[in-house]
Length: 175
Image 1 (spheres, helix red, strand yellow):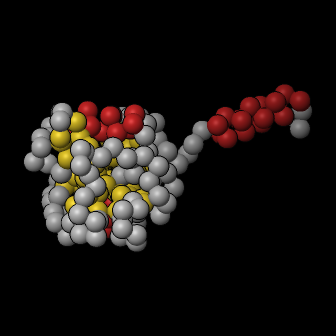
Image 2: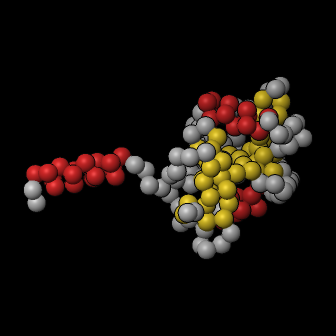
């Protein structure tokens, strides 16, 4: 291999390593799993999400998110929370609640992410939340005091849901 061919090889290799092939970078991405239906995810901040259009239990929402190459949303920072809140406020009101990944099903008031299994690294609770330990164990977002914030609620109640695209998944972005 000549020096110029080697230089081109190194350039191509460095560009390939710098690009995350598993995560898109446009405003939307179409995700298809196991030759099933595809789901359109929209970019909100730095991640991709889709909103469930029907009200279902937290457990059902977790399965649907997985079916479409995602998990219930795992909100990890104030910036991410603000971006999601701003997005949701455009078309939703205080009557629209959205399941997210947080829960204390293993240990009461020790909220962890269903997506990662780890303790939550960020929370943005509504005033007075979490409450009703041992009864309200799953987290959702609701609009309170001008912003969507976190609340714990009974997992078997029905709400809309917010799915987050997985970085590494058995699914693929459509072409």
